[in-house]
Image 1 (cartoon, rainbow, N blue to C red):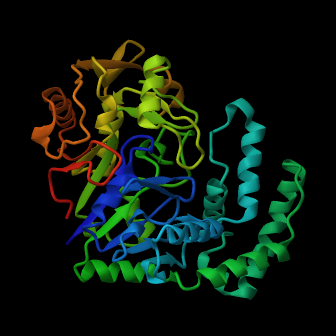
Image 2: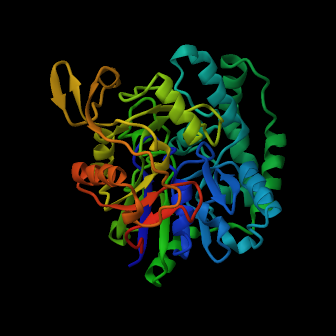
Image 3: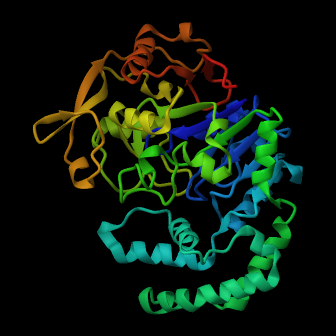
Amino acid sequence: MNTLVVVGAQWGDEGKGKIVDLLTSRADVVVRFQGGSNAGHTLKVAGEQIIVHLVPSGILHPDTLNIIANGMVVDPAVVLEEKELLREKGHFLNDQQLMISERAHAILPYHKIIDQGREELLGNAKIGTTGRGIGPAYEDKAARIGIRLGDLLRPETLRKRIRGALEEKNFLIEHRFHRPKLDPDQVTDQYLEYGKKLEPHIADVVHVVQQRIEGGSRVLFEGAQGTLLDIDHGTYPFVTSSNVVAGNVCCGAGISPRHIKRIWGVVKAYCTRVGEGGFPTELVNELGEKLRAIGGEFGATTGRPRRCGWLDLVLVNHSLRINGLTGIALTKMDVLTGISPLKVATAYELDGQVIDRVPADINDFVRVIPVYRELKGWDEPLDTCRSYEDLPKNARDYVDTIEHLTGVPVDLISVGPSREQSILRKSAF
């Protein structure tokens, strides 16, 4: 059974897009199983940078089937925009490269208005969402008033459901957020038009994924965000609105747990975070600014500057336990070149006690003091390294330390943004 799950092991932005793009040359199918257009994956091929938010990262490989599964919330306009952009760049030339689950829920205009309106009302206490309607769409899914992609192909059903939803949403929009009400017929007509354009892609993908796994295809499941943004296991309430962990592959793509063979966690060689919430190893100084500048640490979706800090292995080990990681893909090692000494957080101190876990209470989490281990840095550039032996000794020591303190092998090391700037130490499939 050739399946691989790739998830973020920190707060997202670990470089999953590049890792998935690299691995899809070996995969037959790539499946996105959660999240929405609040997550951007940056791909760099032959010097060209491409950012996708909904279309899976395998879209740059013409022979790979890409699937948006039922666990996602989908903004139809974003899918169509990405399709047009990719085609302009010579990719995604065949409609059969992409399938979208008819069970996936759609993001409607009122979801975005509510998302943005809530953040404005919260002021300094805001969560730091992207304002793209992700949370409100998942709320409607759980409340059983959501609209699924398959509904876009059924005019009467869609018209009835949008009209019913707007009876409540328009009250909020007008009286809570003080914005103009939405016309249900205009919204319906717009989404029926989206449905016509997306019809070649909408299908029962659960059946397709199951068939491809049972038929021996190499299937890669691509997560978005990171484990510390998981709604159950992240730094709540500063989290996303879905389960981003490996276990959600089963629900978000419709497969049995026995079909999951390998699980890789993508770990950035340092740590970053976008938005609000605690960040124990954050560097609010010149070094933090340096990491941001060299690493290009700006959100792919929002352009917001990412907060930067030292690698936090308490967080990584939290992710390891929850996801059952079998391997680590270590990214952006090259960004650390020229920095010495390097620090790695191995534990926290909370109220005078040393702990090796992430506190559930956000008030405790913001008070923890990291316990660091210092390591020697290196000055040699890493961008031309193509094997583990090519790395400078101190860089190898850094990798060895991560393996020792997590008990998980580092199976892939990224030393630059391009596909070829990678050291694959173990086959993904």
